[in-house]
Structure formats: structure tokens, C-alpha cells
Amino acid sequence: MTRTFLSRNPSVLWFLLALALFTLAITLMSEAYGSALVSTSFVKTLGKTLCLCLVALAMDLVWGYAGILSLGHMAFFALGGYMIGMWLMYARTEGIVVAALANEVLPATAEEIRQGIASQIFGVVGASELPPIWAFAHSLPLQLMLVVAVPGVLALVFGWLAFRSRVTGVYLSILTQAMTLAAALYLFQNDSGLRGNNGLSGLQNLPGLDQIPQADLSIWFFWASAAALALVYVGLAWIVSGKFGSVIRAIRDDEQRVRFLGYSVEGYKLFVFTLTAVIAAIAGALYYPQAGIINPAELAPIASIYLAVWVAIGGRGRLYGAVIGAAFVSLLSSWFTGGRAPSVNLGVYTVNWVDWWQILLGLSFVLVTLFAPKGIGGLFDLVQGLRHPNRHGTALGPDDGALMEKEAVE
Image: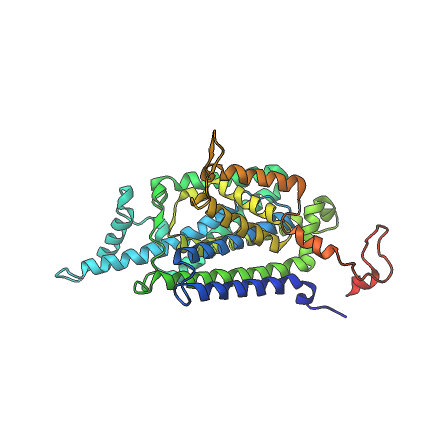
């Protein structure tokens, strides 16, 4: 009897149930629709955490399943934020300029409004013209298309050049890190068209919704982040549970053998790399309106290294492990670096966690790699291992634990 997708992947149902209950609980405790036990700032923190879980899913697919250790996916995350940030900043500035010019004797022309917008946005970097890359910033639909298109095309071109040259392993990781560093250095320049080191700010103020309290906006973005996480989780679980998932795992374990079997290894890797770049960009487009600001420092290579650490600690090769790792480490990081963790007085030295958090995180990564390679997600394997599987039929392989005949046809 053929089993359904959900029966073969019970973890998907458990994940969706946990996410739904979590979303409902936060909503009922929020300042907007509940008892105000959870502050608006913490709702934003939780919404941003869900976005980080979303980009961790992308990292888990490209690294945990396909074996491509990309140290550049947070660059796609930041680019998605820049694309939506351009519209947010343009539309908000347009409202300010139009209101200011309304007091003039003669009605303002479209060119005067455009000049006013350019001066407001780029006066901080000594410019008064809108760069060409802002050509579509006035249109939300077009900028939403760019959220997907810009990181997607960059990943497609970079991946095609790298994979067709059969760059693998640590060399590919170095190349992705170099790509991220190059993008960050370019954006730090004032003539990049994205305000250099100043970045884009005021993104939490949604155009046309000035009268809506931040408490309401924060919970709306929280819902959108939860919905995106649920949809992507189900989609990736469906991908990895089928033939495609088997092929990319085989590429991870023995790329040459898969190539000799006639599969287009480069095509599979390019698809995964591009798809995960787009997912990362969508996560960034949801993250930065909640953060309120984005600057080139968000593209720093260290951010992508943090992403790999989250997935490793949660357990790579397990979608729920990536979510657990990202949520656990990011929330713990907010607690330590936000000054809420009490300092420890050792007499001769006082441990301030703001200074020691990165060292603690690096040590955790080393310990997990050495002693718990399955990460936090491996705990679920221990629970499942307590139950003996219902194995039946004739073994299809010579090794102990090989797939049984009847299992293979289910």
C-alpha cells in the first residue's frame, strides 16, 4: 500500500502543530490582540527569529542534504532585505515630500517630487539623483519581483560558473565567502546607489499605514514570518522525501558515483543553490522591515558562518534540526548580547557575557562537531531508537539493517 507524504513524514505534522500553537500563544499574549504579557519589541524579536529559522532551512538543504557548504547565503538574505527596503524607503520619503510640497503656491510636478525624494534619500552621501538601480523603487510589485530575481540571478550565475568548473569542498566555501565579501565591500561605497555605510533606515514604517500602531504591525509580520516558515518547511520536506532528495543526498555522499550513473550533478547542485538563495532572500525581505534598518555590515562573511553554526548545532540533514538550532542560538544570543544575562564575578575577573558570547558560541560549535555531530536534532533519533522498527521481508542488501523487500515497495 502506498503511503501518503504526511504518513511518511510525521515530523512535518508535529512541526506545523508546534508552530501553530506557538503563533497562537504569542498572539494571545501580544499587546495588539491579547493580554500584553509579551512586549511589542519581543514580538519583533520572535518574528525575526522565525525569519532566521527560514534561512536556516535553506542552509540545511544546500549543506545538510546537498553537501555544499555555502558561506554566502546571508548575502542573499541581505540582498532580499535591500530590495524590499528600497521600496519602503522610497514610498515613505515620497509621502513626506508630497506633504511638504503641498504648501507651495503651484502644484508640484512629478520631476520636482522625484528630485525631492532623491535629495531626501541621498543627501546624506552628497548626491541628489536617484541611481539607476532605484528605477523600480516606486512600484511594490516590481520590487517584490526583484527580491526573488536579484539574489536568484546572482546565485544562478555564480553557481553555474563554480559547478561547471567542478569546484567542490573547501574551495567552493572560500569562493562563496569571497563573493559575500566582495558584495559587502561594494555596498560600503557611497556611490553603490544604496547609501553606503548608512544603509537603508526607517523600514519599520510601512507606507500608508502610519496610523497603525507598531504593536499591530509587529504581530502581522510575525504571522507572515510563521506562514512563510510553514510553507517552506512543507515544500522542502516534500522535496527531500522524494527522488530528488535521494539524488542530492547521494551527491553529498559520493558525487563521482552519481555522475557515473548518468545524473547531471551540476544541474542538481545549481538548482539547489539557486532555490536556497531565493528562500534566503524571501527571509531577508521579511526580516528587515521588522529590524527597521539594513546596512552593508549585514553582508559580512561572519554572518554566513554563524548560519552554518546554527545548522550544525541544531543538526544538519534534518529540517527540524535547522529550525531548532537557529531559534535556540539566536534567542540565546539576544539574551547574552542584550545585557540580560547576569555577569559572573570570579573574584580576579568578572565574566561579561556580551564579551564572551562569541567565544562560547565557537566552543559550542567545536564540541557539537566532535561529540554530537547530529546536533540537538539527534536527540529525536535517540527517542526513536528506543523503538524497534517493524522489519519484514527479504533483505535487499548484504549489510545488517539493509532495506527489506516489503519496505521497498511501500
